[in-house]
Image 1: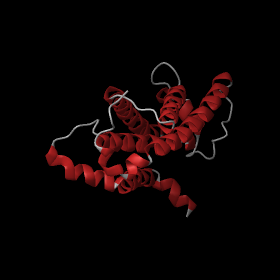
Image 2: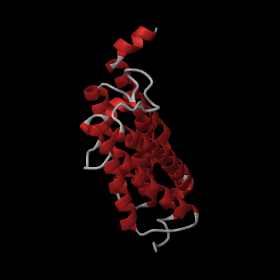
Image 3: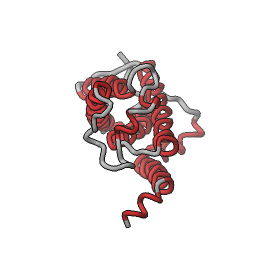
Length: 207
């Protein structure tokens, strides 16, 4: 068990007070999207002519992504990695809501997992937008929760003192915690602009 979570954990900031609930919401959305994609992937593997439910147009299509090597990065479908990862995240959120406390090494391990997830998701974002040239709706749902997962795990670890910074960075830490929503909005705007720019030829035909 951990000692008292570092000095009132930053005076009970929003990030700290609602961390478990935010983690639960992220896990629920990510698990649902990953599970749907897993079911669709199984059908697709059984029958390559199968049309996934998320095939909406030539641009917005899960099937086109499933047919590429980028959908199986570790010898198994990426969707299974998502199912396992978000299930674990949900379990952690449940434990926190029940009052569980964890040692610093646990939080640093979760931080490492969040960093891995962030890098992996951005690799898939790049592949989807600039290589495969197709947008998968359920994949984008995973993007939308993987980024907040990294942001809030990082901010919680900073606020709780699990990630230790020198005193001179206190104001930077407080700024990041205070403006967590702005950080996310800015991040998503950059991805949206990349999508609009890359596929403008398609969007312009809809105007």
